[in-house]
Image 1 (cartoon, rainbow, N blue to C red):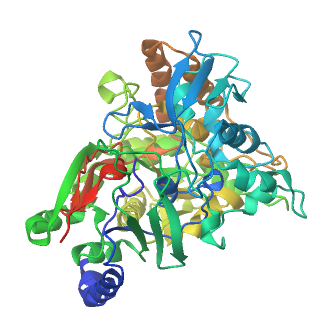
Image 2: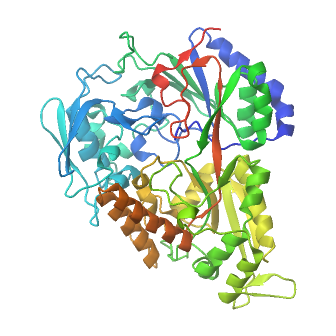
Image 3: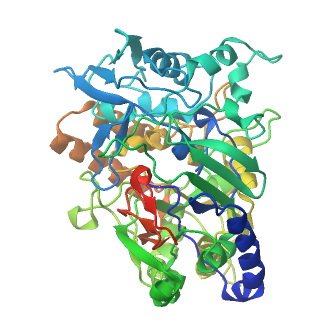
Length: 591
């Protein structure tokens, strides 16, 4: 899913207050840069790194500067050549031999070779001294064995695995890194004994030309809190039908916006060329299409997931402090409690009021576009809104009510917990407010607290000290294994019961439940199975286990909308790829 396709909402009052100022600032920006045709995009936050290996959040810059051996067609989901011109998979599925295109170059003009491919995988991604979530999707089988990558000749490279792995071809599309620039940082260590690679290509890199790229663009400048400017990579490999260099658009500006209100304002004033369209402003923008010169594209159901999740971690930090209050941990780890919460959330009301009916109820991590999706009609467990069912489950689990109709646990503790989400996302703020209201009807007090995105990441990934989370994952396409790092018990995104981060000692008291292990095992089996019909059965069982145990309480699947200015030509929008998946062939109409 394109990082530019977001679920966002805006406040009308703030729109009216700052429209004039936003329009003036953007006019100045565009006037200063009008000499070169440019595409102006937006981002709700500054990039945290320019190093894809260390990425832990959606980064709007990285897809534009990186390139892998293969790529995915944004309309069909099919694998297509990128740096590799072809590949051959062995009959037993255990080897892939890639043949690179001829005369590939990095953005500094140096040759891009098989040595760079081997370096990227063997020295960086598969290096256990370098923490990266990219390694999780390359694991094979129960043992978590990783591929080996070796050079065959100047243009051919072989990937080998010990057993069949259905997503093997798809997961070898990771961006390739320049050995001649980064090898020294991998081989040398800092004062703490860690590879210097962990500090290269940060957002403070100077000069930015040191960030050598294989993708369609390179970083030209970065001003914190303002914008990232990209220029066309003169050595990018793609050519048009007449041999003309691609991408066609010479310059991209990614404008950092304070929140989704500002994003809307800047789009409506003509300062931004592409924006996600949220349901609450769909009607407004639809009326403005012709007058303001843009088109709203409808890609059908989004592949993103949106959920509420409880922290099931029973471990303790290095000082012996529990990540979760033991009283609350007991509630959260009670299956009836989680199921009661699912029955207490009025998702139909969310869909009608917050999403204006533009979507559907969500029940699974796997998107409806995937052949491995299990629908409710096929037997997937669902949770209707029922306060009676919720209260019955709570009473069954030993909870009780006082004379004020407040929910207490068996020991008499008032049931109260905090709910966090990222501030500035108006849709999630509205969802959190409704969840707070819904759960009050079963006697639960929710302290809803939207916080800055960086602070949220710190809680989830580092300190692990949070109660309940309202968040989502960007769509991973149609292949279920793309989310394996969520379901692997030691995966980097197994956030509902996060284990130690790479390089950290074991967590005292960390307990992994049997159902977690089973889901992880099923995902491993699904990746090992090459027969699609059998894979569907395996992933169906996994989806049932997830819905039964509710590590994530899924909420809404919105329809995927993006508004794109008419001057941007060649858009082939889809929920899978967004509006920019074929960026290399997009054109800007002269105005």
